[in-house]
Image (cartoon, rainbow, N blue to C red; front, side, top):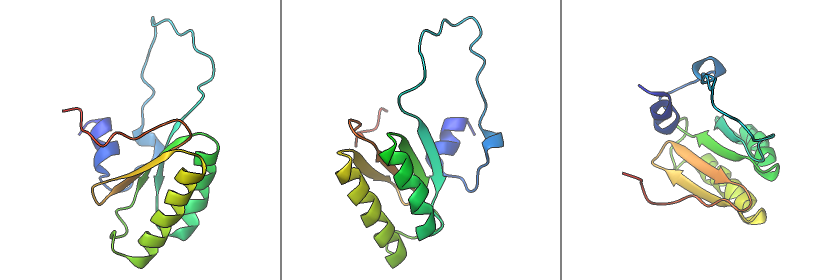
Length: 117
């Protein structure tokens, strides 16, 4: 399974050891520090929402794994409402991918609802 498949499909617990820095030797890099990062999170409970909110307020996009909850779970409904409010406050976007992931985007970033292929 490729790294993007792991990110997109969820696939259980992941650690930072599973993410590889790709060797870009020979590729000219004229960019400075990135203005936005993509953060990966797992939502196990309401306490995990704080770090996600902070990241979105800081301008980062967050892909959150919600496989520990069902979307009809009252705790999950409350968490989604909190994250929806954050996306609204920063004029960002929020979308749910299947039953296992939520994407929360910061200011100026929209989440397309169409698949590329």
